[in-house]
Each structure stands twice: as C-alpha cells, then as structure tokens.
Length: 432
RNA sequence: GGAGAGAUGGCAGAGCGGUCUAAUGCGGCGGUCUUGAAAACCGUUGACCCAAAAGGUCCGGGGGUUCGAAUCCCUCUCUCUCCGCCA
Image (tube, rainbow, N blue to C red; front, side, top):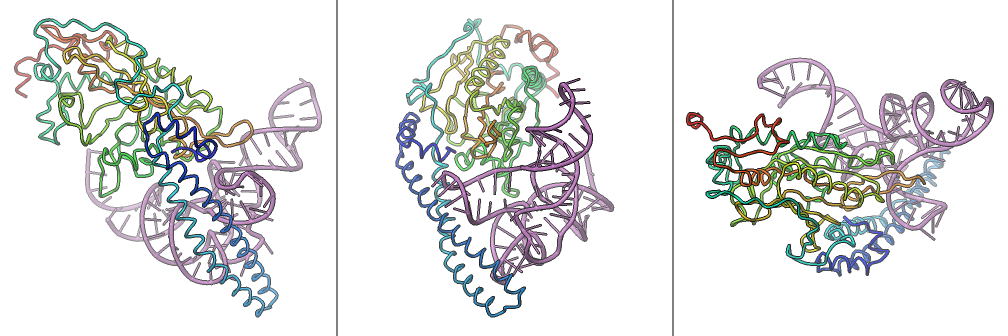
C-alpha cells in the first residue's frame, strides 16, 4: 500500500510512475486525495463535537457531586443533543476512511527509476548471463521422461492422492529435495540469515499484510472451516513476524530465511509450460527476507542478487539475470531481478528466483517501523528473494547433467545427497 | 471436546463507573557525582489522526449499557490451568 503522503506531495509524479507499471486508472490518485480532504474535514468536525461532549460529561459529574440535580439534568439534555449531531458525522467519517482505504489498496507500488518502461517479458533487460549451455549427448530427453526412467518423481500417484500438479517424490528424488533444502538453508545461514520454520497456513490479517489479500485471493488455497490460507511462499509468514512492531534502529538489517512448501492454485495457467516440474501446485522453496533501513535498501537488493548468483554458480547451471520491466513486475515491487536457469533439453529459460525491493509498500500495511535518531517512527523497507525454488532447479540438474549411466550432481551437493550421482534404479526397487 | 481463569504502556504489574492526563517496579534515555564505569540520587520515557497549537482516538478485536467505561453486559480471538482424546 502506497503512503498517502507520497500521493499528496506530488500526484503528477505518482501518475507518471504508475504509467510505467501500465496502471491505467490514474484518476484514482485524484479520487483518493479528494477523499482525504473530506476525511480531514470530517475528522476535525467529529473531534470538536467529541471535545464538547467530554467537557459536558465532566461537568455533570461535578454537578452531581455538589448535589445540583437540576443543572445536571439540563447538561444531560445538552450532551444528548450533541451525540445526536455527532452520529451522522461519525458514520460518514468511517465510510470515507473505508472507501479511501479500499481505493488506496488498488494502487500498485511505484517502480524505481531503474525500471525499464516496457510491457512484456521481451522488454526485460538482461543484466548478466553466466555459464555455458551444455551440449547434450544423443538420446537426451526432458526431465519428465528422466523422472520416470530414474523413478524419482511420480505425478500419476500424486494425482491419485490429491490432484494434478501435486508431485510425489520418491527414493533418490525425495532425498534430492531434502539435500537441496538443507544446502540452501546452510548457505543462507552462513551469510547471516536467521533460520525460521513458519506455519504453512496463515490467517487473513497475515495474508493481507504481504499483499496476497485482497489482490490474489484466487491464487491461494483457502481452508473454509477455519478461514486460513495455505501459504504461496514463506515470504508471507516470515515478513509478518514483525507486523505491528517498532524495532530498534540498530537491530536493522533483520535477515531471515525459511524453507516451506508453497501452495499455488495457478488458476488460469495451462498449456505447454505446465509440463512436468515446470509449474506445479505444491513445491519446495527456500526464501530470504530482509527488513532494512530505507537508505540502504537498494544496496541490500544488490547484495541479495549477488547472494543468489553465487549460490547458482555453485550448482554449475547456466543462468541469466533479468531486470524486469514495468509491465512484467509484480504489484508490490519497486524493482525486481529475476533469475532464470537454462533447461537444456527443453531449450528454454526457467525462472528459479525473483529478488525484489518492496520499499515501504508491504511495511506500510504491516506497520513495521523503527525509531530514527530524532525519535520519529519511520517505515522500514522490506525485500525478499528465493534462494531457491526447487522444482525447476531439479529439472535443469536432471536434464543438463544426464549421461548414459546416471545423472551427475554438482560437487557441492555430494555430501548432502550422499552420492555424486543419481543412478538407475534396480529392478526390484520398482516392485515396492 | 468438557470445566475454570485471564488478556492493561518495551517488560512485570495495580486499577474494577467520574481527580485514569493509567499507580508502582524493571528496562531505556538525559543529568549530578566519577579519571572512566558501577552504585546512589534527580529528571525523563507509548502509539495514532491533525501543518501545528488546541483537540481527538487507543487498556486483545468488535458491539452494547451510561451524561460518563480500563472498570458493567454481549460476542469473537488468543493465552494459561485441570480433565478427556491423541502424534
């Protein structure tokens, strides 16, 4: 949620920035400012009346103590009249605040000056490309064939248990998940991030805090009986740890990391991109989140990008980094870098991480603040990124490293996985 | 699931219809003393709305009673104790 004062200060600049995000309804900005003027007027009127009521009530108490019953009665009449007058003002004030807030929540975050103006993924700027695309041996196949050959992910049984898009990892496939999660968490904690294991369901207030509600309600699984939502990413519970808190300035930056499964309905996606592990309803991810001083957030964004970059390097996969254009960025982000790894058998790039600075867009909703040197409360900036989302990493590891007699794993995973490669299953293994 | 108790400022904790502009303690900040620190003493110390003063709002959330609610009533959420069930 944007800060009102930003709209009031320079509505013209706000509209120009919204245009970069391809947000059409710029009239909303003026509407919100007009509502704010109205709100202030009503607030003043309400406060003045309330002040009179308070003063009169106090007098009644004093008159009663002195035994002047008639005078007290007269005052009571006076208060009753004031209260009658106050009621419509209070109702109107509440309605105005509600409408204003509903409209304010519709505005996306403003893009930083580094965001290119384009509209589609083709307009994203490639910042870096790293590693070389492997030349696969003859007979190489995409990961959806490899997982069957090696018997490590079973989509059919996952569909039987739950539904399509819920993979069932098996044997070495399950162990590879565990190894990757463990490795990613170790990598993050070594860089000073505190590890959390959060609840995987959240309440409404939490989902609202990070912006999943009201915007993306249809993308989350909803537990109707208890009104909980399955988390689409651990960013949601983790960022909310500090909701409604005022932290000490010297406790910044707050660096947090968490593993969680992520649940996404992916309503509306279908077609080729959903094949295999490319797009699923439940997947594993390790996330990094930082709450930082406003002046440092763009340095921290660079630091987080470099953190993920080094992690990807150790996995020995070719990848590229993109700076997203206004049209491709998320609603809440001010600047986003996407990481894509190259899937050699599919011959395409797959997104495995998205690192964003949200500035005060999330913390304004969650009221995460710190006290500055002058004793003033200021909103902190929030950032997050994946390090990393597993399924597409696994897809690329399988495809890019396939050989005639097994799948070679990068050296960094050997100790976590307990072997240097995934070998073909023995026959009796299939007969479990 | 059953029975009971509770939710107050950063923390602990009093207040149970009008002087609550919330006692007191701890912690924090500033000062005196000190070479410096500790101790002691003195002062200070919440958030939000409003350009600011004045004023208003906030004692878990929401609603109600009353001229007046931290205090009484209803309701929701959460915490604790005991019983039951259980990984």
